[in-house]
Length: 390
Image 1: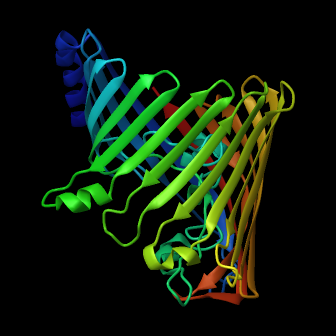
Image 2 (image 1 turned 45 degrees about the horizontal axis):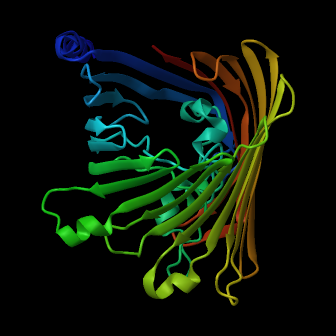
């Protein structure tokens, strides 16, 4: 790690000669589960503990004097930072931006408002709160390692999460990315994944195309996400973010998997999210996503609902209470999961903070092919975390 810091410091010093703007930053997240346990078979009610470094990250960025060329790089280790990322960019005019590379899974041009990662924001990354996409398959209610197998007899994926209705942004894979904005209110965003030895037709199958409309009352966007593997026809997302009322933000999302001959079996995923400033010290977030069958014979129902009230105790201390419910009903076979997650934040939302909470949720036994309705169990944990950046 000392060598990495020295290298980045040297890059910043040398780059400072050629770049008018250069910066180095870092971020560390450590999380400890003081106690954790569950009531599943074979555990005998034993109480254990655990912990780890969710993030150990260094970043550097810079641009030339005219702001026409620049680059960004990230080196990290930890649960969320096992892969290095970086991209270079060129902006010859204000209406055009070209990038090459990746942004280490953070996502470009996401359309999700407060309804995915923005629901818990930075607390998501510590594990004191649940994951931003918190949902069935992968899920806090179903162990994520079985997500790829969580399908019905016809091969249709039964899972749903908030990424099913809201575009999470393009990231992770190296790509050629274009942002074109001929006028202030309209933008066209394009991403093409590139990988060695790929056929051109496979590259263009992985095209991400977004039409972005910014109006006085908010943002409307349509996003198509292609599937380079050819396993499906890709995914389509429609988003509306409305902020015309002071102190209120509203997100509406529609997501659909385009799956060739089986498209009629795929549900339309509908999502709603809201953030309301009730007073100077009390806030409320709520979100809902549901899978709506497109086939009248389909009996599959999928619903997730979360609420997150917050109470500012003083300028540096806020108390949150997250409560969530998940329901999956497949032809009369129903599963219901829940979570309860109060936590305290000492510090600022976008700055350094200490966090402590309680997590309680229901899970189900799973054998890789189906859920066992008769074998639900409760999990609980008491996590604390430090989240510090510089």
